[in-house]
Image (cartoon, rainbow, N blue to C red):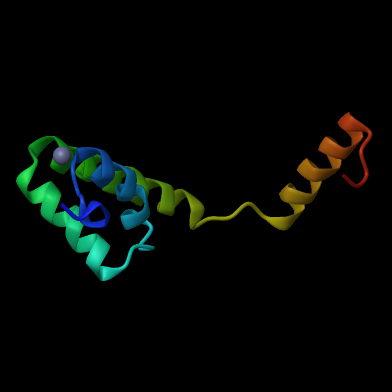
Amino acid sequence: MDMNRDCGCESARARMGILIDRELTELECGDVRAHCESCESCQAEIVVLEKLTDRFRAACAEPAPDSLRMSILDSLKNQNGIVDA
Ligand SMILES: [Zn+2]
């Protein structure tokens, strides 16, 4: 067996997060999708991951305003007495 194309549960799951982030090549996506189609537990896993990612994206779509970011940074600097790491 070609180890690079091995797509058991372990390698499918390891690649799921990357697949969700759309950073896999078409070929690799195909491997993971093919495995999920034939493997019930990985199929369930990827459905959950996709839902989590959707929520995460929705939350990230509203970035914290700069003023809030700056005040957090300032309070961190004051706490640690670190101006520049
Ligand atoms: Zn599996």
